[in-house]
Amino acid sequence: LSPDLSLSNKEVSPSGRIISCTISHASHQFDPITLINIYAPANETERRTFFSSTFNTSSLISLSPTRTILLGDFNYSYPSPLT
Image (cartoon, rainbow, N blue to C red):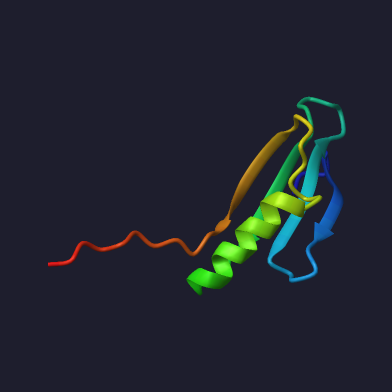
């Protein structure tokens, strides 16, 4: 990372499946950006529970307007048509 960038508000969820941090510029050349990285369970039932609880109760997903990038491995697969 550039020495002009700093990471703050680093959080890891209890499950270790969500990591977030805020990136800021020392000279305030851009507004802070929050990064949220998600590693969702591969099992469909566990994945549904994970997303339901994450977006309903997580302090990592703030309701206040911020510049946020959500990325990660969502373990989503498209259903294949029956042939």
